Length: 380
Ligand SMILES: Cc1cc2nc3c(=O)[nH]c(=O)nc-3n(C[C@H](O)[C@H](O)[C@H](O)COP(=O)(O)OP(=O)(O)OC[C@H]3O[C@@H](n4cnc5c(N)ncnc54)[C@H](O)[C@@H]3O)c2cc1C
Image (cartoon, rainbow, N blue to C red; front, top):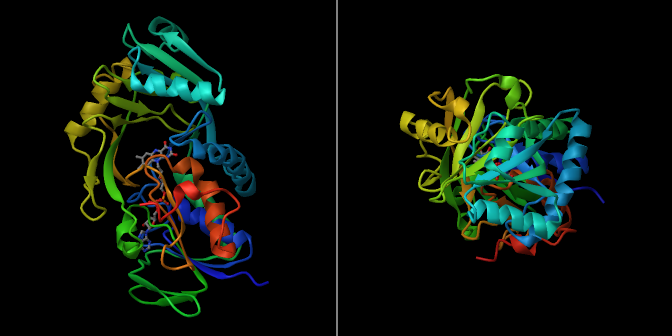
C-alpha cells in the first residue's frame, strides 16, 4: 500500500524527529516551520539537555526512556553525528531535601547504581566543588547530555535525505480537514495531504484551539558564564552536571563543558526565580543583569570559580506545560487525520526519537505500537 502524504507543522525537536521517521518509512513529507532551522525562539536550543536512566515523572515513562537510549544511538549512527555525551550527575541538597529524596527513590525503584557523598568527599573527588558543609550529594554515573541543535539538524538532514520537502520561514496560519485529507494555509501557499502532524511547542494554543489542550507557556532564564579556573577540570568526562538545592527548596542546575565549550550553562529550576508564565509573542527573550547574577551567585555556592563572574550569554527560553506536566501525544479529539505532539514541558527532549516514531505510527497506522494512553489528548 502506498504510504500517505503527511504535513508536519513545527520543525523543532519533535517535528523534525517526526519528519525524519515518516520520510524514512517512505511517506511524502511536507515540513512547515515558521522560523529558521534550529532557531532559538522555541524550546529546542541552548546546546544541552539532560537524559538519565533513573528518570520518571510518571512510571509510564520508564519504557520510553529505555527505548530512547537505543534510538539516540541509532540516530547518531545514521547521521554520523555526536548527539549524546555520557556524564555523571551530582545532586546536592540538605539532608531530607526534595531533590535528594526524589533522586534516591527513583534510583532505588529502578535499580540504578548511585552513591551518596558528604560535602568533604565531593570536594575531594571534584576540587572545583564546595557543597555546603552539612549537605549530602547524590551521584549518578548513568546520565547524559544531549545536544538539541545538533539533534534537530540531524533529523532535518535525515528527513531531507529521504526526500522530505522542508519549508522554513513558513508560518501556518490555518488548517482544516476535508473529505479527503487536510489542507494547510500559509501566508502565500496552500498545502494538501492525507494527514497532518502538529508539533507546535509553545505555540500550541494558536494551532490547537479546537482540541481543548490546556497549555501554559513558561519562561526560564538560561545563563552561561566562564569559571575562573582551569577549564579542563570542568570537562564533561571529568566533571558532573550538577543541581544544588538550598534550605528553602530553591534549586539551580547546570552542565559541565562538552567538547569545544568554555561556558558553564546554568538556570534556576525550582523556586521563585525558576520560571514565569508568558506567551510566545510577549516572552522577554533577553535576561536582565539581575536575573543572570542571581543564578550565578546561587551556583557559586557550589562552584566558587563562578563567584563574581558575569554572564557571557543568557537567554529567556520558553516551554509548553500541561496541567499534569505530562505530554500530549495522540489523535486530535475531533479529526482522525490530525495527530498532536505537544506539551513537552521541560522534560521532553530526552524522548525526541521515540516521540518521532510514535507520531509516525499514528500518522501512518492511526495507532501506536506502544502504550501511550497516559499521553491522551482527551484526558483533560
Ligand atoms: C530551558 C529548557 C531546558 C530543558 N531541559 C530539558 C532537559 O534537560 N531534558 C529534557 O528531556 N527536556 C528538557 N527540556 C524540554 C525540551 O527541550 C522540550 O520539551 C522540547 O524541546 C520541546 O520540543 P517541541 O518540538 O515540542 O518544541 P519546539 O522545539 O519549540 O518546536 C516547536 C516548533 O513549532 C514551530 N511552530 C509553532 N507554530 C507554528 C506555526 N504556526 N507554523 C509553523 N511552525 C510553527 C516553532 O517555531 C518551533 O520550531 C527543556 C526545555 C527548556 C526550554
